[in-house]
Image (cartoon, rainbow, N blue to C red; front, side, top):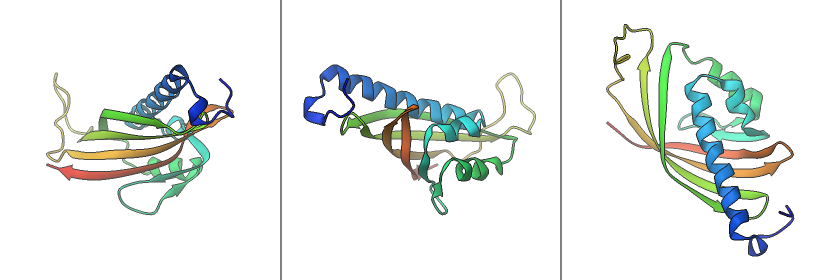
Length: 152
């Protein structure tokens, strides 16, 4: 695939490969977040990537993202359940996507049994709005807007 191609000249196979790469990027990012592997999480963004979380100022760049996430309690357990991932290819070098997210959290410091630890009573339902760019390192998140839509 020629990376200078515009959307009209991309084949269906080209578009499918881009959609797959961006979907994989979404899933890898939430898995790294849940593992508390914030370096890997930040590496999935472009070097100047923006992360707009539901509250607070946007984070700009990998170092700001890592620093912000490192202050989270190490005992916090999260699981982001992602559905309805929809990727829109804009060109051979850019795409956009939306993902629905259900977020479960728990305090890992509590005693757990064979079923694990008890979840927080509040479940958060939100969405990710991503802008992806093709870089020399592959597809990366250039900008992510995360927002909560509902909660229990």
